[in-house]
Length: 87
Image 1 (cartoon, rainbow, N blue to C red):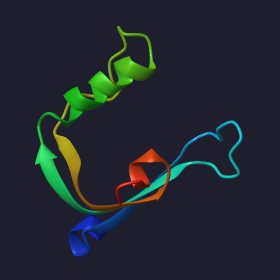
Image 2: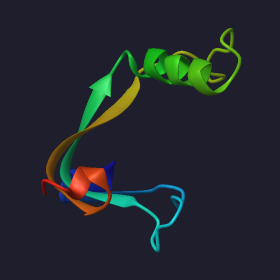
Image 3: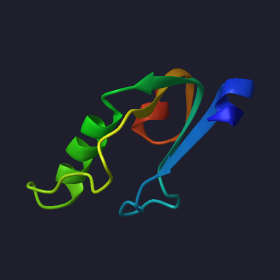
Image 4: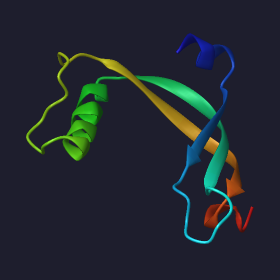
């Protein structure tokens, strides 16, 4: 959190599995600015995400309390794949 507050520039990278007949793995690189927002809804967000990856009745295992949500404003998208065609 302190690092983002000092310098909000971030780079997020994602890699996909190799496609048939391709030499490379598709990947995306997002150049963005991040903002940290204190939020009373952080636990609710984590609980919703837990239900996506775990059985649907699962709640986030930590105690309910305020937290932080990091929001990204994407400025540039690069990489190799369909998302980079219009870049």
